[in-house]
Length: 372
Image (cartoon, rainbow, N blue to C red; front, side, top):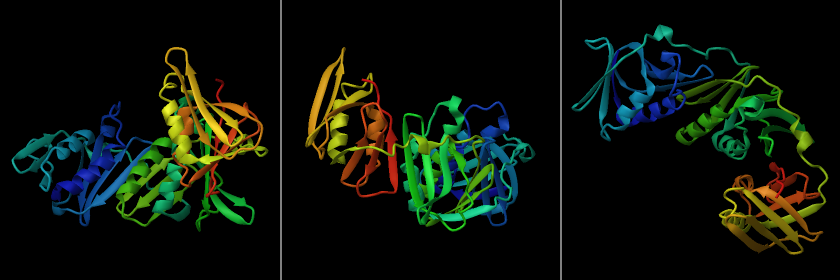
């Protein structure tokens, strides 16, 4: 195997590849990237046994062949080479290693044979549909923050996707929750996605595909699904992942349907007030929202640090309520409100609050109150 490739192309590819590879592995080959030169280009592949990424790029190929080499080390080497340079990779060199040369720099890396490299892709995935890149980015951004990181409830460690009949229209619904907050986003159901009964895409996969969406030029992303795998195809990059094998809870039960108290407020004003007050609440993360006619107050008290209070104008004409929130959770939700105003609805201070953008009905958020 021997080829010459532009440093910028190789660096971009390795940045995608190395983020899949776990830094600590009990199986040595899983620390490596599989590199193969064939007639039409160079294939780079990495896996952690749950997720696999393949990227094909152009290069000047002198000899075909394949090997595997340490992914993170290769990325660090290429990252430190000069901008605008070309890189030559050849295998095997005189010591049976992978040779990396650029200008006066030369490296030789130990390799592991490709026959030991595992492959999780290759299955036929029966459900296939396309979704616009910007739409997929928006869906992920509006749900990803609510995914649980608690490993004991593994079935919450991803986003839940299913097709749903919503009145006369059919939608693709995407849900994430960690038990403290819930994000639920809808988008028109793409052709071919009608049979998605409900799958859970792992947190790591969601994070990786979100990074790839910023780098791809593809207008549409092809998504393929089976009962246990998902595949995202973005022109030159293919990301395949196992799905989480578990039953997602009945999230609709925690979305309140009877909330008689409505608070409408400018989202930037509320977010800024919460952010300022949170300086005093950094340790406890607890703030209190106090509603009153025509206004809302944001306050916190810390025995060690002191107190903070801020009042802003709001639309509210019901009885006064005091509700405690984790300020980080509230700010996460407010950051995804794109319109000018946000509406919070609740029935009392101990029940979940429903939050949504007054100019966009495609997403709702649920936030559990916090005892303050």
